[in-house]
Amino acid sequence: MILRTYEVDVPIHDPAHPGQRGLHVFTGVADSPTTALRRAHQAYDAALAAHTAGREIPSGQPDNWTARGLRPGWELEWTAATASLWHNPVSWNSDVAL
Image 1 (cartoon, rainbow, N blue to C red):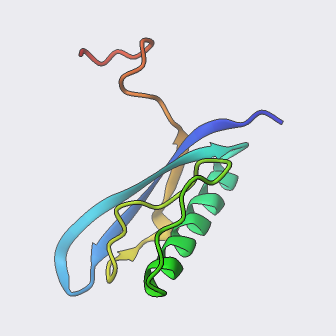
Image 2: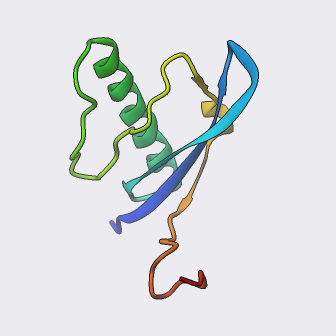
């Protein structure tokens, strides 16, 4: 099984302010886009549970999935989430000019 780094993009909105929308981005190691979506959702659920309980958001998972930049009260639109291989924008193999 080959593990690669994936990016999961999840649309997010603030129900209290309908015009405020954004994107929550997760990255981590997975063997497929399906696994990446599942692991991102698990990382978000763990982060939200920790935040709700007043604990620190978990980090340092073996496969690097975590949820930083948590916005309590905002809703993630998991049905619209996408997963794809992550491409480092500052890698030497990138077309991004530094």
